[in-house]
Length: 240
Image 1 (cartoon, rainbow, N blue to C red):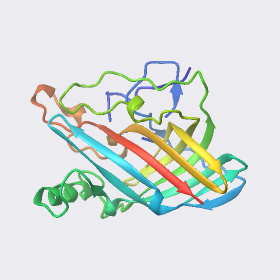
Image 2: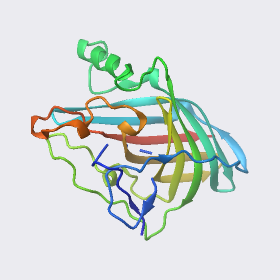
Image 3: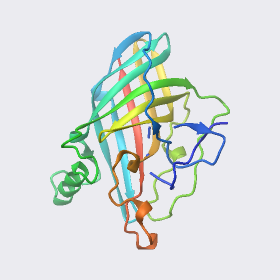
């Protein structure tokens, strides 16, 4: 049985090395892995149908939106995905729970683009490059662990994961100049020259240097003055 291994504190951060041990609320971020050359047909990402939906939380509230995809490819051999890479535009990050153009929307958008979070001026894009794809078997499970309870406790991995995953996807996620390998369950369909894929998971944002309000530094969580390290990601990809 495969479960999600802990990364330290109960966290935040998608897009996992899994083993039979205590689970955690995030995918495990490990050192970047070599990307092997993949055989097959290269399909082109459809940016209009591909995106990362994000969810960020603090005890007193939460925000959500998307990071649009710009370019990418998926390599398929028959009905199997053998490789792929995707680029997402951090500077075009959208916030969907606040009115665009409002003062609060502007403040949050500026803060997310700042050095406290994505440092978009120096790192305007995020990338994900597939390193392996393996079957999700009947014995594999996505398990959850208790998090700090509040009115806005982050969603668990089991809530974010697709209902019927059929593959584990491993890949190098690069944000803010840092590359980590993650592994997560995904639903992938290859048919008629088109690939569609969906995945959902948590990452620990601090693994990529997005450390503002890090809950690990909070001595008294009862004051609710922190941002959950958990960031929920739901990835949708379509390539033709």
